Image 1 (cartoon, rainbow, N blue to C red):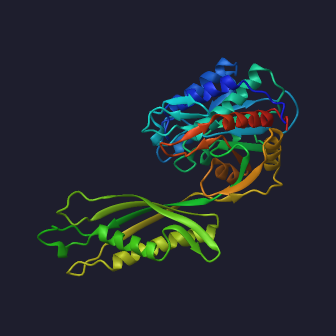
Image 2: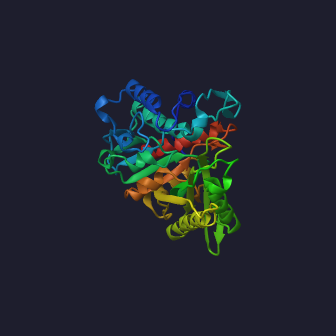
Image 3: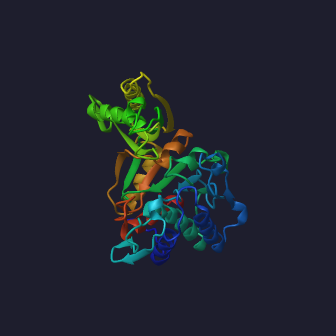
Length: 393
């Protein structure tokens, strides 16, 4: 059993405070300011605090970049990085965290709690505060709070790597149980599909129009019929896809001539993921060819696909994985590993040459109004983080 001690009252108060601060992707200014205030209050010098310019490279811009704190070691050892993204999904805006029994939930029933990922944010912040307040010996440390994770790992994709200090062991906190180490995650393509048709009066001359909606409808029906939408299994290959946004049209009496669709394709297998994207493209070309006006006009499709992040899988022999699992076991939990079908900041850091393992914080039902934070799991994650930061493991 680990001998690492934390101030549980301060840790719980901190996560409640952090979850109560709005900060969806691109609007993280308030939460970054709150973290900086806590750092200054425990005596972290301003010279150790750095905000990078990741938001300037982001497609949505954003209020602020990633927050990085670098501390020299008080004992020898390779630099360790602890990280957790600070942004939440829009559903969390307006959350009012309440601690009741074994869980924290939002008192506002129309919002998610924001445990994803303010629990991780608080774990990293609580760890550095415990170290500084109690003057705990530690190796060189980098504390890293990225922005814009929820919209495609933007913060870590455009992070200033030179400011991270070349860490040798990297640990990320995000969703799930504190005993589970996520050692791999899927890759994701984003698709932007613009369908053009021909406008006409839907009552007087619908036959002269080419409906962009009809084109998309045929394409989507073809994808669903042939097993390329939703959960996808083709022999030994598997993946997922989803059309999440469709926008277009102004009135029911006009044949719709413009439609925008946004979709994604995921798979751990890069070649199969590209196959899913190709099937989407072929389906929309099929839709264009099969919707014609009476005078032979057709529509068109402009199809763009961009890799948001690549998949990765670490071995259990990777130093960061071995160290994380040892810390979990030392905290009295049975360690497990898993591969996940979501994207993590670990995808980006690993792609940057910094292998990163992800541990859970006790969040449940994330991205829903039923989200809760299991307090004891969160506290266990705080203990694991402190053990890793102080190289007690």
